[in-house]
Every structure is written in C-alpha cells, then in structure tokens.
Image (cartoon, rainbow, N blue to C red; front, side, top):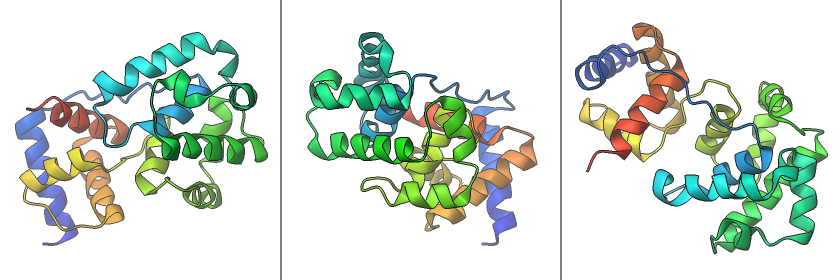
Amino acid sequence: MTALSSVERLADHVRTVLGDGPFPPPGGWTHMGVVICDASFQARRKYELQIRPRLLQLGAAWPDAATVRGFQARLTTEDLAVAMNFNSPRRVATAHDITDLLAANGVDTRDDLHAWLGDQANRVALREVKGVGPKTVDYIGNLVGRSHVAVDIHLRTFAAEAGISNLGYEELRAVYEGTAAALGHDRGGLEHAVWRFKSQTP
C-alpha cells in the first residue's frame, strides 16, 4: 500500500464515519501544572472519567502552579500523588522530570512552551525524559495550542478499520497529517475528532 493510497483510504473512512466536520482543534490548558500532569498521567486511562476531573481539581487547588516555576515550587513542598489522587510513582517522576527540564530551559508559560516545541532539538530533549515517547511530545504540543497528531491506540484502531495497519508511529502520523491536508482540516482537530469518537465507542 502506498502512502497516497493510505491517505485516500483514511480520508474515505473519515468522511464516512465522521462526516465533513468542521473539527475544531482541542483548546488545551493555560495552567502549566495541569499541562504537565495531563501529559504525565493520561496514558492508558479513561481520560474523561479518570484524568480530566483530577486536572480540574489540581488547577483549582494550585492556582499558583499556573507557571512552570510555580508548579516546581509546589512540588518541593507537596506530594503530587496526593494532589492528583493518583498513586503512580513512575508517572509522578515523569511530571517532576518534565518540570525540571522546562524550568532549566527557561520555559515558564503556555506561550513559552508553544514556542520551545518549535525547535526539533527541544523535542529531542523532551524525549530523553523517562516516560516520554513521541506520542507524548505531540500530545504536549496540542495541550499548548500547537497542531499535532498524537497517535494513540484510538487513532491506530480507527486507521486499522480503514485498512491501514502495521505502520510505525511517524508513518501513521504522516498519513493522518496527509489526510487532514487532503480534507482541508486542522491536523489537531482531525486527531481530536477521531480520538473523541473512538474513546466514546463501546
């Protein structure tokens, strides 16, 4: 199957299942502590049920953590596992490490992170954090208003239903990006529409 035929298959599937849109991009967050925790805790969890309520609570309880420096200061005195009501030492450690990396690079606000992720070297540095893979890097971009395709199990399942399987992360991301371009959709908007549809499918 060529890349072009993969785009055509996925585009046909999108039109058949999701219609013609519009597919607005996800809004993300402005609270940097929430951004970091979203990226660190969401994998393999039911987002709307298990993660989003905890993020909203964290943002309300820690208003001073809306910047990376504010969040980092909170982490020196507070237990993030308790604040998130989520007992996962590995995910807590990932949140700490992302925070430290961003702070060390002078990234403090949503706008700072949006700009910082535009440099490929910074994306590579983020990948060096334990627990951060290519999907998480793209996902963080979407959380701060960039437009990426973060390929997860829902997007893989949707593509498989279109007859597209056995592609690596970057290959499948490219197919989704090509499909968005072919259909005239925002990349992040298409990704979010697929994710929302599949996450609600029994």
